Length: 321
Image 1 (cartoon, one colour):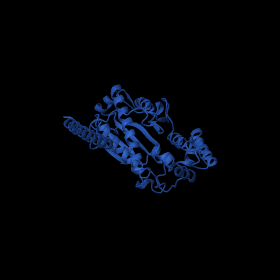
Image 2 (image 1 turned 90 degrees about the vertical axis):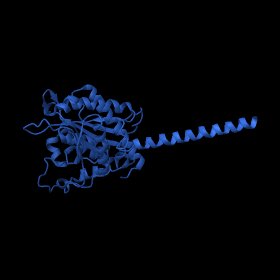
Image 3 (image 1 turned 135 degrees about the horizontal axis):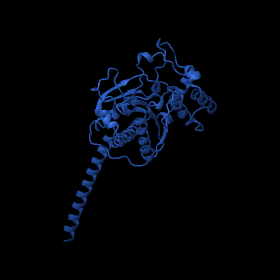
Image 4 (image 1 turned 60 degrees about the horizontal axis):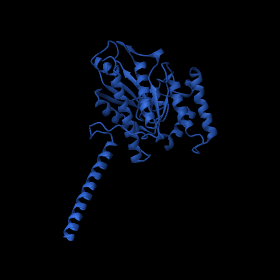
């Protein structure tokens, strides 16, 4: 009898061990899959846990401002995008991310000021870390401060502003040096910039066009080739754009296009970045969603979850694209 009992317990033990192993392997498999773009697993990922983004710096750029907004049928782009930005900020901070806002209130900022703030925030991260010459970093931070304080005078010096439509201007050497500092993995593996907008058709207004557009910088944009064609994060930008597009499509704002383009807030720094047009406010379906506070909560959650996926993925594959 004792032998039979021992044999029975041994068999039960092996069954439990096998079941645990299969369950653990299955759980690990699906966790790994969720770290990719999410194109295979279509159900929403669980809400990210607090602490998922510790050490990460997310720069959020709410498009326009009260002095330069787009209004249509009761919709105010700068107000809605600022509301979305603040909702996203709250979620990211709950996951221990540091969030930096280029536009924290209703007031508009010159595009050069936004870009200078972005560059300045990244450079400041390197001060005292032994990852560059602190004297030189202070000088470059000071140059960006000059742009912030007096954009009319200094933006044309350091940025491609007004944009050179002869396509012959080359990047300023000090800005090129800033770009080189931003190639440091201490920056590029921890920073992400997102510029938030909504779209509109030209006149006459076409109310049928809707959906999300996401723009990213590329080294293959002919208009920008002479100015600069050595951006470090082109593959990461596209990966984040594709991942985010799929996620937003899943909550009812349909996909439209992902496109490389040289928008000011994408071309005048060298951080991982996208500019998102969150639907068309000239379309009634998109506009109703964007004016619904519950939908903005859902959209902010999607952004937060996608940001977690992005950082999980680049950590999985290492610091080099």
